[in-house]
Length: 409
Ligand SMILES: Cc1ncc(C[n+]2csc(CCOP(=O)(O)OP(=O)(O)O)c2C)c(N)n1
Ligand SMILES: [Mg+2]
Image 1 (cartoon, helix red, strand yellow):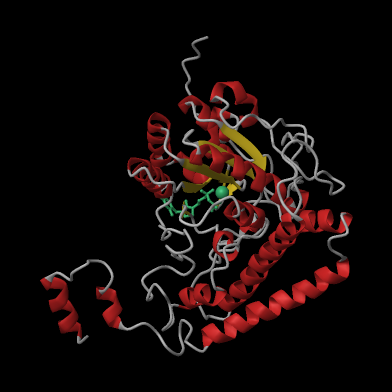
Image 2 (image 1 turned 90 degrees about the vertical axis):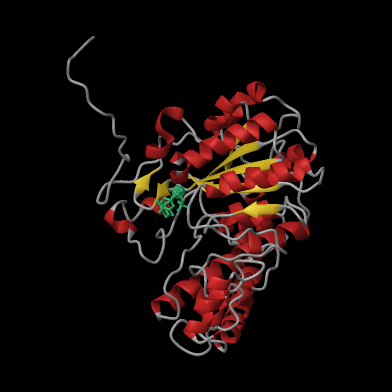
């Protein structure tokens, strides 16, 4: 009917501060219920997987179903340790920011499984194009924590010589492409890198990273066109942590139902996975990485998780969501869920957990001491002004050389 009064639909989160958190609309498949398709399945034959949630760990902590069984006992304990390390690292660096030792920090609370488990599906030489919330890729690959801290403090040992925002690490050696603050650029870069790898008949694959909110950027969509057309060897990761600073995921998702479903219009196989389930994340990541390696093309993965902390040290979530929303999140906490699984299988215990927590914190504090000997934001050593001019051009152009001389370096 023609009403003569047009209006826009603006999606709103179900609750705001002061309200009762309610996630009853988040439909969660039973652990083990979602099938594991053949690696060469066509996107249209596995459409359901873009609307369900692949889960391995059930409520009791058992690993069940067709996606279970890929990780050894040692792998699982390492996974738990990596996530605990990332959490401890975050806690110390948040405190360091409050103490004025760095200007800025971003934590991973509640999302540790995504980057830690994903890293284990990659091989040396593969390349991630991460955002600021995937430091688990570095931790799980044993990148030295002290280097991360040097970067956060922009001190004299900062591998990036003070030229990047704190937490925007870079390590070619560890398959961690320099973080770009301009979100969604990771997608076009990763797809381009993957295409280059295929053009060179190389064997290395790429992984693109994006948050729910940033999928609204056009870079996301144009990257999907190229990935789909040329069947680029890339894993397209969407971390749906429900929030994009203060904007809820419903804005960027729009009418598509799920973020995974965005892949279907491009003919890209798309899976949705419980992002707080270390085993499920790892299994789905391996499936997608294998597809890429076997030249079967891209896979889009949506990780359903929850940003339990503030967006960054410049954010206060109590202004836009109920304080208790995090506790009401139905997929639980990734560290506690893996811990429960290990205890159930007699591979771990409450005592060992407490002990490991203490050991890990000691390790983080030792790294922090070492980094602080080389300076923090306002004290001690810092990179030379000369470094501003280095590292951009293979050969410094004359105008930059002149500027450097004028600056006295
Ligand atoms: C192209 C671009 N636009 C805007 C911003 C500012 N910005 C920084 S973080 C952020 C929210 C991103 O949310 P999401 O993609 O969901 O990732 P999350 O922070 O939840 O991991 C925005 C809008 C940016 N960095 N880049
Ligand atoms: Mg988000």
